[in-house]
Image 1 (cartoon, rainbow, N blue to C red):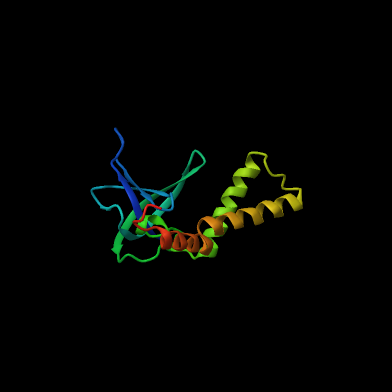
Image 2: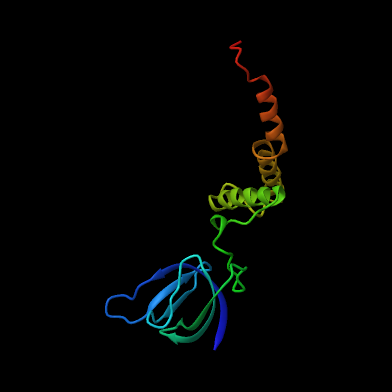
Amino acid sequence: MAKATVVVKAVYPPKEGKKQSKILAVNGMYYGFYADKLQFEPGATYEVEYESRDWEGKPYHTATKATKTAAAAATNGAAPATGGGYAQTNKETQMHIFVCGALNHAIGQGQINVLDEQNLLMATETLKRVWRQSFGEEAKKKQEKKDEFDDEIPF
């Protein structure tokens, strides 16, 4: 019998003609369960014992025991469902996310050739500069300077 810490994202009743309800964990895994034996609440964290079986080449998990726990970090790779699901990040990580997303899009659209090292480096540095000017310290300084001159006098 396998065990997992599961943060419940949603609870679904049994489909018509079926006996098992199911839960969706925040990590995307589904677990079937019998509602007359177990109860789950969205947003709650549980220590779940479950059995797994393959059917038509897909794994199915059935919860056999569940114990509600305090809101702790999940051990199954899922983040707790608090704070909108977003972790706190520092400015450098935010910039990396911005740059990677923009590069991924540009590469996918054929705007950047990944085999052209100079072009790729130039695009990366340009995106970092754009992020700094839009969201970093440079943007903060620009806003402070603008606020300094933003007064009630119309000229």
